[in-house]
Image 1 (spheres, rainbow over the protein chains, first blue to last red):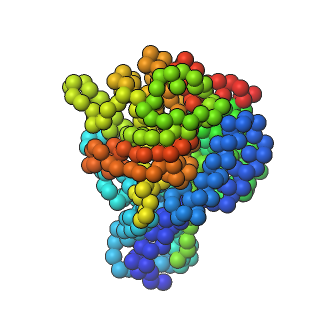
Image 2: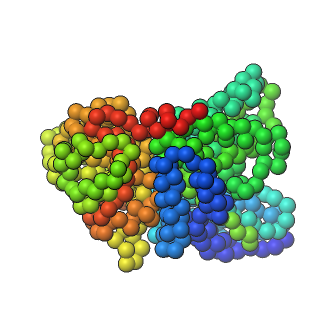
Image 3: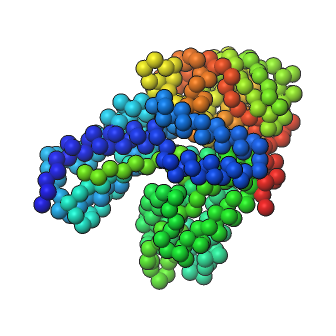
Length: 281
Length: 182
């Protein structure tokens, strides 16, 4: 049994919040450049140039690449041989978020209730925290700040087995079509298949943690991801919805077994600011 | 076409704009998001005055990040505009001439732009540092309690955007997609 003081998690979470918002992943930057080479619309090319310039400036100026620095979504894999001591685990994660958003000059975007008062909590807490118990004696923390614009274009649909793969593909493509320019294309399409109602949504969110350099390890899904990507880019939405051939940079599918009566499908739309950083303690 | 405009905007300048034109705005820009819009429209419904003179002015849909030391503003890219659609026509009716945001507008807003000879300009979503560099001064003028959603008066120089809806009802979100879909 390895003892870890929860206070040691605070500076790690703080740094991950800041780094995710300041430094865009190399995979995203490389993929935007790759699509720019193939882009046909002059407006789209100039938009992609501005996006690339922005990522460069964000890193050099140490400013968040997007002003919507998001909800702090934290995935935490806790090794089963770790004994957490020194206080409240959830409060420690929230304290890391609080410090990161304050000291990193990140925007505080959380309101205390969704409908009635909507008063800003002023420190971007509470974070959304998903913990999983895994083998080993390490803790892996991933912070994935998620903006509201792309999150608002996401959807879960309880489909029928009879809808088949064609029905699922059509739903995903249609979700992107209906999103148009709203979620800040070029987007990444996160798809969760199977499980149940809430697990499909979580799978879709988790799928977005993959690097754009990695293919789906399952060749069957890898092929379907490529087919969906082609269909999505044939919609013509283009960067920012102004028209073009670059609507999505990638499609990521995660699937799980499901009930004989069900076929849940979740689409979590990710804007081009696909932010996630990890650390292992 | 590249066009440089100075606020307050004049109808005759806006009549020359076509969708797809690159526009650089210099002058004063007011900011507002959902919560601030609701309050502004509530004021108009009660027959009260807005916290700024709307005539010929530009409203930018943004909730900026806090200003780091030595900078006038933090990252400040556009937010998604459709959430302001229910409020936008009322502001155009009292003289606002341009909206800056991202993503398509409703037919009601487009109709109001035709009626009021106003335009909608798209800034690049997620290009928040590029936009921040064109903002030279910023101060909160109303609704400080809303935090990032407060109304700010900004002085901008060559704020970059693209004409998304012109005064004639053209819509780049429809025309652009038509051109590149397969």
